Image 1 (cartoon, rainbow, N blue to C red):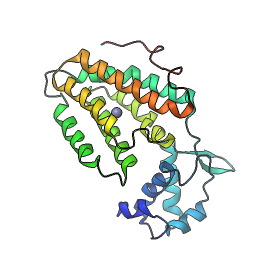
Image 2 (cartoon, rainbow, N blue to C red):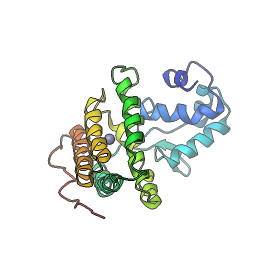
Image 3 (cartoon, protein in one colour):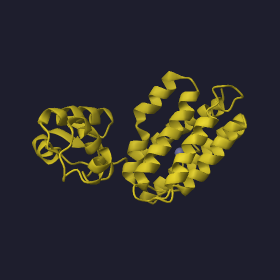
Length: 238
Ligand SMILES: [Zn+2]
């Protein structure tokens, strides 16, 4: 089972199909530190598998931007985002996600509020169980934002968003809302505005959530207010 692998990959042999999940978890948890060179032979022995599934997993993780490949040096984990890279990421999100929330907040069958309500229930049930709080929050946040992006019905925008791998990069910095309560409150506001088919409120709620989220992460750099991406990004309306 993936859960037992995540808790202790070194204790048990890992099925070849789970090598990707196990390595990804180790990188996200920081067990494999940023900038670490990956020794394929050592990883295959640690996980109890041949080198083939390890190589396949490493290619997959390179696609996630969690690894970089250098000829002659092999794979190593990508460095954590710098403050400038974090700001760029949030400037991009501020361009597309408030627009997506506005587009989603319509009185049509495509309105994702029922799916968002179900997704919020998942985190509400998990919020008092802190065993895997950061990973639960990461998975919830990715699903919540994906639901809104996909309901906007623009595959080009959605693909550009997916390729940023924003959640993986953000949560490698640190989980800034460890118990998920701040995220729950802000996500409820976005869901309520979308459920009410109020485009302006949905756009504003998403903008505020992203600005707040940026400031929570930027605090790690000691530059929370001075680094605001909001001044540089205008509001886009369809
Ligand atoms: Zn969120």
